[in-house]
Image (cartoon, rainbow, N blue to C red; front, top):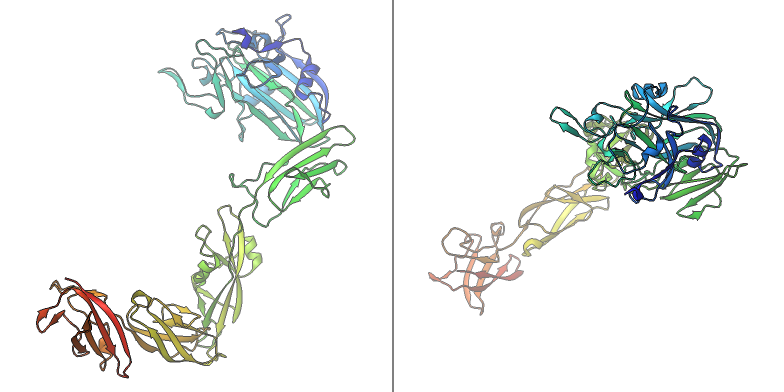
Length: 593
């Protein structure tokens, strides 16, 4: 059972403990090391160095600071009241940090001068307060206190729950506690609680009832500035149920802080086309090597580097004249490009006052490339306002132009809050266009094609025109397809929307491909649609063998499937449509019964 436990050496002094944390790093200058703990247990210190061979323990080695004899930290867990003494004092700085009344404090202190701009260390908190309902009431805890040496500045505590200022303690990190129906409390910051060790047949490497997950304490510092650090742990209000802090060897690092990765997944990626500056914030007297995706950037030798493309960027800094070499890396991703189109809205100045009301939103879809994932378009009168998010056009559906030709700025953002810009040109044209009015001379139709009927508008004039069937949508080409049968009107106009041609009516003919003369009132007879518009046209119907069956015209518009009063059989029948000028069209259809 004990083979799974950590081993603790409580003979180490302050210098040896600090050297374990720093591994003699040349990136840190350490001085004035001291350690204090249990003054009453002769030959037993509340601090020490540990080593570990257990697979279920997060650190191979490091230091332990505890509120009882540090050698008692070796596992497995055994429930006891613990050690300590009522005469062993607490710590005033810890009391202020945890808002507690501490006793049995162990303190490791030292001065250090970093050569880089960031320090950090890895640790976890363990406690015998993780029993019964004690986490609901007792705040055994730990603080990593730092301040600039020689100043009256207050300490900053680095041992806090990530992204908060909440100190690390048994009362601040625990799952839901239900000891009895009347002794319970809700969970607090449970995601940072690691495990209970007070389980039956436990093989815990440490002699503590529970522990947090491994946490990382980190802060930015000023290179060359001397700081004082104080690591302190204590019990809250009583000497029972002790606690400890385990700090990983070599994890107290003076490092380079390049910031967090800029990733799409965390919504922090860099906007397409933007530059991003990675800055070490270190002296230009140091030697720098920058790498992108493992490849040395030979021309990059400055403390900062300007990123223009995605990748993983690494810096290696030799902190002259020391032998310290510090490295760090950061991953940079870019958002997809926002592809926009410039657009134009053109109105005709009918009253000649040089003004008109434009609905700018008519250009939204064209500007956004019909991309529904983009934001609504916001319009501005100039690019400066657009980039500053100031003076947007308040009511874009009713905007009055400021000049005959005016360019507005359209701003669109994506889900990453990145922006891109396009131009919207407003043109106001008077009726005196350079394009003479177009005259439609004919509409050449190709009908009897079912859903594929087509038409070509024939016109005079050599201007810049656009065309429409029934005035619904205008297009550049005079050719139209998929026109339904029926009466239609062709239009042509100047592209400035001035000078619309005289409407030209035309008809698309078509016929049903089958009919069912069964008396149900649906498709009971066969005819050519809109035949009444051709009063001089004649239709002859034949059976499949060419036998003449029926003739009718606009005064007798249909055939009911009979010959001389007798019903003809279901079959294919043919027709010939003869126009006034003698031209004819042939086709066939089915009679179904």
